[in-house]
Image (cartoon, rainbow, N blue to C red):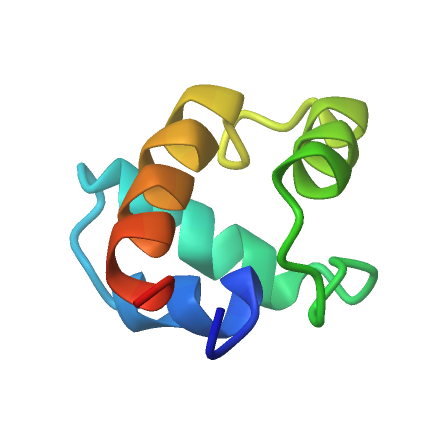
Length: 74
């Protein structure tokens, strides 16, 4: 990958209140312990599941990660 998942997902910040991707990105940005250099799905997924936060949903992560792989693995 050419960048970490964190840096990829930041592009979704600033969306509306009903935009789950924007809410995820904002929560991720404000989480000082989020693994900012990580690219691995399993490591990121474990971190997100351990947080169990309404704005850091695993379903949204799965969707964002699929887009991340599609766009950044070229």
